[in-house]
Length: 594
Image: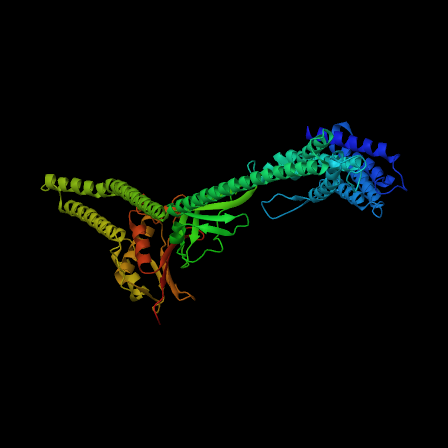
């Protein structure tokens, strides 16, 4: 409706300018204007008409705006040409044309305030000039014929300019004087009472004219009466404005108090939260932190720079740095605060202390690891028990059965057996008994090795002496070839070394083949390499990964004991295939000083 009224005003101004152009006289006094102000109304009305023309029914947007600006500037030029003879009309026309030219231009203001439209003060100036020229002429009917008040421009021109300014205001109802953000403010009151303000002098003029024409009063009294009525109307308007301002002030004070109460409530709520909260602006500058944040970070001064935080919209476990250089584990979240357009206007970082939870998780993990280690130890113990049971069933049962059978034979047929047979049977019983005792000693040593109770007392030990002594005590080792220099000595426990050599010789004799050779030599790296080599078929490839394990079928505990005793003396043991055939077991020990 506003745009329709503005369009009608544009058409009216255009027609009014066209009708009065021919009646103007260039040589007339100021009462009869030159054609320039009347001509200026034609492009001004067309500019107003173009501003309210909808895009679908006329020219494209940019072209229509450009044409309106061109017509408005033409009105400015035509109005300025009459400035020397008719300054009031020229100034009002120039102001109206400039307002139409920059009707949609706005100047930005501070953040949160509405922009200022350039056309508003220009339209106000043009309307003021038009009212100054129009109001005195309204009282002309109150004066006798030929004695009316003089004016700065004719009535039709003042009315046209006033219609032009009103149409320019109605062309953009969403901006300018018609726009308001507060429906109860004085600006709305002015807008609502503007028709009464304009109608007050008109009513006063009509009352004065009626009083004079009917003879009720003289012209001066009639004019005074009209002026008094207009003044009373203005006073009533001012009183209403003062009352409106007072109500607006009280409402503003109430809103400020409510805002302060809400701010206090928000601050209290923020400070009483158990979570650590930091509020940041859109540029990640710290606005405020609560009490829990200061306690968690140890920062009692003003926090200026935020610590490293997760990106907005995410969260999870985080390490929050403290003032003393340490860090506390927290569950951090970063949330954006959107504005009306959806863009982030700030951020809220929330941190929950999870140090106790982390300690509980670590304790639980440690307990689980202990259980895992315990399960592994139980599994190893179970495997050890199964292997030991299997070995005892196979290796220990055989000599016990042999001893029992031979002893039963001796007891049953002692008187019938010759002496040589008795000696042979007793010798076999003794051999199996020694074998069984050796097996029990190996088991006892195995238990000591498994519990870590075996310690080595290392001293310089001549290898040749130990190998010869052990060979002499080992059955079947009489043909063993020994190739060791007398000066070769190793740092080892003498008893451990004797057990190692005895087990290696027994393994070579039992599972290998003659000839068997034992050698030792000093290495350039300060170690001694002891080698026991046989000429048998060697060790199968599938047995090598568990060669030095506890229980290898057919080898008993010997190589397992060898490995543990060598390692207890700071050495190592390994296996190599001999060339062209056979097995080589190599022992590396630290060499004794020369």
